[in-house]
Length: 196
Figure (tube, rainbow, N blue to C red):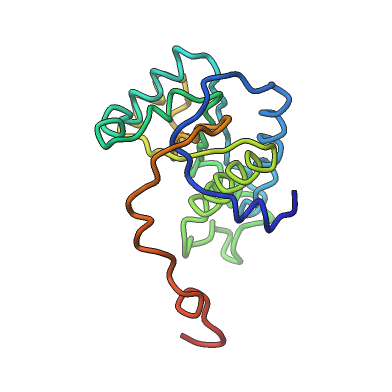
């Protein structure tokens, strides 16, 4: 599939067939996500892949899936083939920037103008979403309401923060978000040239 077509097809899908996807396909999605950038090649991003149905249901509960269903959507967080849970460790970035090749002239860690670990995990999320489409699947996204409980459920080290749950699978007809009625910001408002 051409890259432009993959990007064009990217959307948040909220209804999936509850059928398995081959492990090799999920591994290819993970391998694509691993190619995301990271400041100083810190590589502080990680992903958990959940395929076991009972654990997917528990993750759905922790992501507040019941409130999603009350909003008229399907149980798309738990009723999918796999959940990708992207996580990031701010501490890995700090450790990397305390290494000798990254210290300032004063021998200190840089003052971070932007917390780039959040940007980098966002890139990881986007690569998962696009790689799923490239594999002929679909993906969605749901935030997590109780991060400490999710960490505990998945035996995740406390230095890692999960940023959400990405359900992946074969798409079924779904209810589109009413927010889409807002339409896209016109391109000249989105992309500006030379100055604001």
